[in-house]
Image 1 (tube, rainbow, N blue to C red):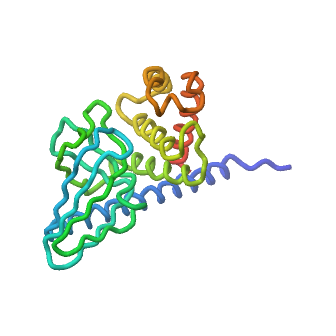
Image 2: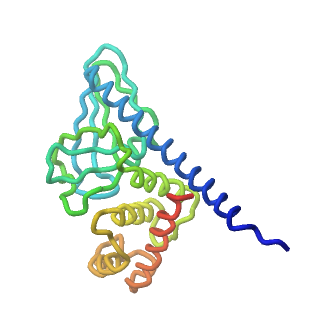
Length: 238
């Protein structure tokens, strides 16, 4: 049987790379459009306040939206939106979801609504939003420099929904642990499997970790979680 030529294989690889690049650009465009919509509503008078939950991942913030106008406002948050704190000692946060499965948020005329924001930190060397601390954030208008982070969050949601992750923890916690570590691998000082192993050794007293599969063996648990981290990073290029 005749083997495919190297030129053909390179052509297939190029097509796959272009397709992945197009998907990435489309995701970035959707996030930028949502950020622009947020900014437009703010220009119309919408007020947003954020209260920290003391966490660097998971339920990170409580967001209160106030509409001082006489007409309803509708806000659609998008996974991958980035919140930049006014306090530069605090972490930038990337949104995974806001409210009920990212459904549009309707703010009644002259009223307010509160929604929970789930997400992840983008600065492991800074402080998470403190518990019950009211904070000021700006929504980043162009997430192009954070394309990989955006795709990481989206990949986590897709893999989790498809039951592709392991079952060391309950599904939402598994995704939260995995996606945050995948994001940390993209920092200037990349997070490694050794970092995960050392982290797990310290965290074994934590209730969430003590109830995990392989809880008595941090090395096995690190290997299982790292498999999902690698699966997430691989999905960025598919």
